[in-house]
Structures are given as structure tokens and as C-alpha cells.
Length: 157
Image (tube, rainbow, N blue to C red; front, side, top):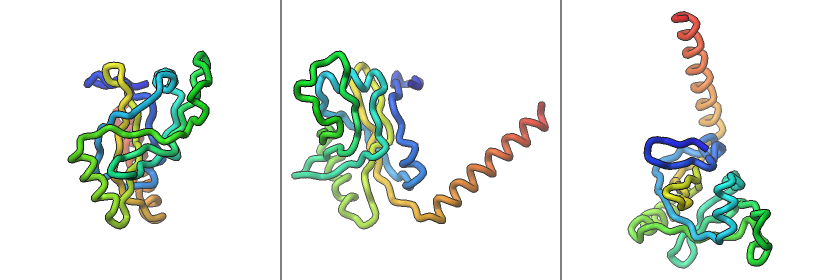
């Protein structure tokens, strides 16, 4: 529910992605939704935890993202909260992402969902998986930075 200077209202972030992957490049994509799904997203009923992007017939599809059914809507047509959803990008961006996905070690994952001018957008990132020692090193660096900030705060207060 953050609102930054560009008029974006961040609805959900995939924090686990930053822990498990090195994020290399990000793209903003539209997504094909049903009417009740956009209402659920506006109410923050979306989870990116298990989401990933897959190529099918030259198009990119968002899989594994859970959008809870909207309570006030009829259940007609929205019985599967994790159904595949088509991503909308420029053809050049799609081709670039597909090329990277065919390279060894790359994957595409959703890192955040935000609302911009009433439309839901998904930030799709190209990422490489981290090894266990990389995850430990990242946590150690984060912990050291936290201790430094704490020490500086105590010193200047």
C-alpha cells in the first residue's frame, strides 16, 4: 500500500524473490484480468509467493499467482484463483525475455504488483538463482549494515 512519487500504489511485493534470486532486469507488464480479479487486487488479496512466468507460443503467461475470489462477485467464471494469466508487453520486450529464459540459469518472476491510473501492472524481473552461500552472504551483509546504522544512531543521539 505504498505510494511513491510516480503515482504508483504498490499492492504486493515478492520479498522471497529478492532472497532467492539475483534480480538483473525488470519490466513493467500489463496483465489480462477478469473484473472480479481487479477488485480483489485493489483490496490487496493477491499473493506473488509461488508465481513465475512461462513462455507459451511466443507469449508470456503468469502462473502460480493467487488472487482470492472477490466476495461480492458471483462465482461464475472465477473458480480457479491460480489460473494462468496472459502478460501484456511490447513484442521486443517479449522476445528479449524469451531469449534470456532459454539461457541456462535464468528465470522470470513477478516481483511486485502495483496500480497505476486504475490499472493493475506487474513488475516482471529476469533473475538468476542464488546458491545457499550467496543467501548467507546477503544475510550477513544486511545484518552488518543494520548494526552499523544502530551504532551510528546511538553515537549521534
